[in-house]
Length: 100
Image (cartoon, rainbow, N blue to C red; front, side, top):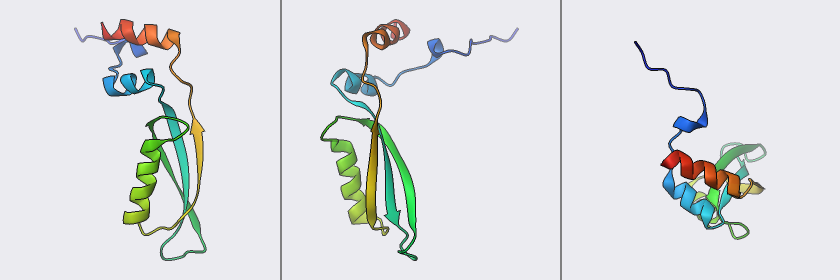
C-alpha cells in the first residue's frame, strides 16, 4: 500500500540558513529590476530577483546589482523593492515544531 503524505507545510523541509537569516532581521525581499535591452536600448525589460535580505541596506541585492553592472550588457534603468513580513513568533513556533 502506498504511503500518502498530507499536502501541508508539516512535511516541508526548511532551509536552516534562511531561518537563521530571518532570526537576524532579514526579510523576504523582491526586487523588480528594469533594464534597457542591449540590442534595442529604447525598450525596457524587467527581471525579478528574490532572496532574504537585510533592510534597509539590502547587502545581497546591492551585491547582485554590482554584479549586474559589471557582467550583464543590459544597462540598469530602475529597481523597485518590496519587503515581506519579518519572522513573527507564530512562524518561529511552527518552524521549530516542524524541525523536531
